[in-house]
Length: 141
Image (cartoon, rainbow, N blue to C red; front, side, top):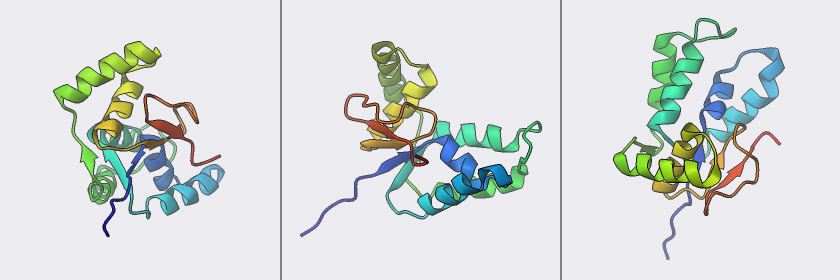
């Protein structure tokens, strides 16, 4: 008997909390690090790009170096990573229109869908919201 693990999609805020070093973010950082040890996760190129920009931003209180960000991204690339494709773009445009959300949020939803994920782990999207079979869950609640 064989079965497949259902993948869960990780948004950039989970990755940012995983590298957070501020005492005010300790609980979320620990939760994010535990979460990233789980074997059923996936993400997208868009999420990795958002992570890099946010993590290395010079105005960020606890930013990390380019070298450390690249090493972290390489580790995350062990998970399935959805590329930005014309199909994902077109689906995101339709989702943006249907749900009246930002294009970037719609692109995350459609990248998750393209990978076969039925759940997105995110603090930024509406917890519990279902987008045509892809549900958002805030892992910090």
